[in-house]
Image 1 (cartoon, helix red, strand yellow):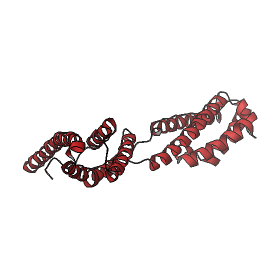
Image 2: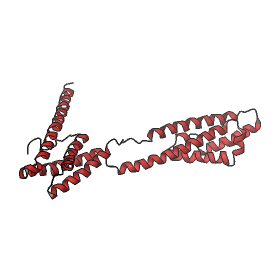
Image 3: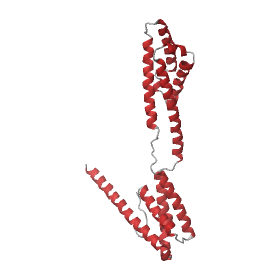
Length: 248
């Protein structure tokens, strides 16, 4: 087997798929009367190359990571504002407002004055409890009596709902991402399959039946030659950079 009858190591995933699709597309387009064992290998190559294609462009970073981070920031900002507002009412000239503010402040202390700094699970649990007590529970009347407080609480409630929804979407995405075949692993699998199962078989069959397999073998060889040239160029560049780094 000559040097352009194997795909070199360090091929990119896109290059691996290019070779695979060159072979598969020619086989399908030309309707080669392939030997049964080789036909089975071609069908497997077709399936594996599609799986490789489907793995492209899948970001390792969660789609909702930025949204969750932004919601956490907004919740923290509103919660801090809410605390300042309640504390300001502790010094209100109206005695009843001071008493109502004291009751609300006790509830804030109960869930934790730094609830906005806790983990999402702890934060959501504490703030939901605060929403329940202040908006529909025993402190509803006190909240109505404290100017502007309800606006903060309603804003927090909306943000908490958004956070829980986004968190749920993020968790579902993580499950799917774990099930998804990563590009690197799949590219390595197709690379091995090409070098161990497809290419040796193809070039052997060309010798036995050049009329049937000759054109496919030539196309594969030409594609391999060009891609291997790029791989060698990258290797040389990496080697040069390593040598330059040693000299620094």
